[in-house]
Length: 329
Image (tube, rainbow, N blue to C red; front, side, top):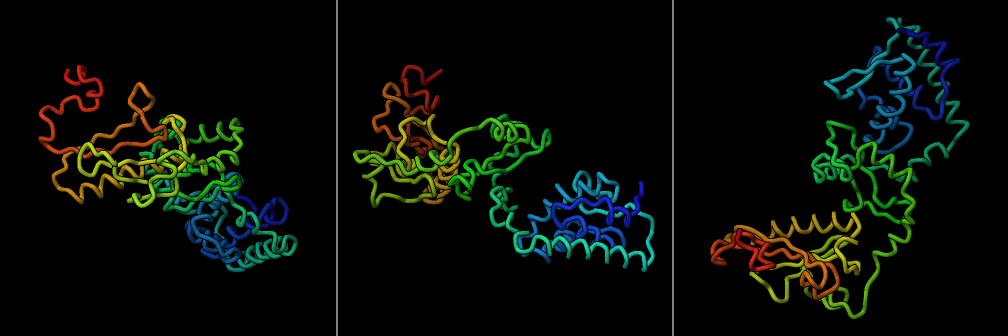
């Protein structure tokens, strides 16, 4: 259904930003259709920011508004929105110039009213995540929600800060999570955790803990939230410990960013150990949780133990060997 563009621009356009007239202007200047990137690039002429941000704005906000008002329709490649086209009938040169002039007037008027404050939302934006970071988080999560396990083919996935930047969270990959739209909405509505206390707790250290104080000079690798050392009493050569920097005794008390950081460092160390020693053919990965499970240092640490063919007579059962009579089955 075509609409009267002049009528829409003059009387129906309700602007909370300059996005609508900018998008219409681009479509008018390009014979009625344009790619998402072309629209986003035009928005960048008013705000020098990253084009990915405006790709999202175009598809999630202004494109939806103009589509819902039957002013534009989407151009798709399968399910992916590639661009937009005007729904109006063919315009002559004079009509196009007139409508562009109206868009320019709306843009100029809005800029004049809001001035330098117009782009402050970008300076304080707490939810923006770059495309490369989003890709890495989704890849790590195997394109599934990290809470309910839903696949991206079932429901849209969001990548979000676990601890918001506004409350002390970092932009490190360990502080990102992939959540489906439902879980992310429920989290925002129900989670009343004081994130400032969570952020401060990352600095917790205990004076008499060997993993808080006694590892100086032994660190072989680290990231924001954990570090790696070789075990002082190795089961096999290159036996490595991955240890959170925060003092926490119980594995099940680790925060999700710490679990992410530990997982990343485990993968990195595994690759490095294999590169060091071509005889390695497997690994045991284990955690002693509690005295009855053999824990002697009450600061969480994950064992990464390289294994080699022939290093024991019968490796069958692996970690079941913590109770020797139950290893074979």
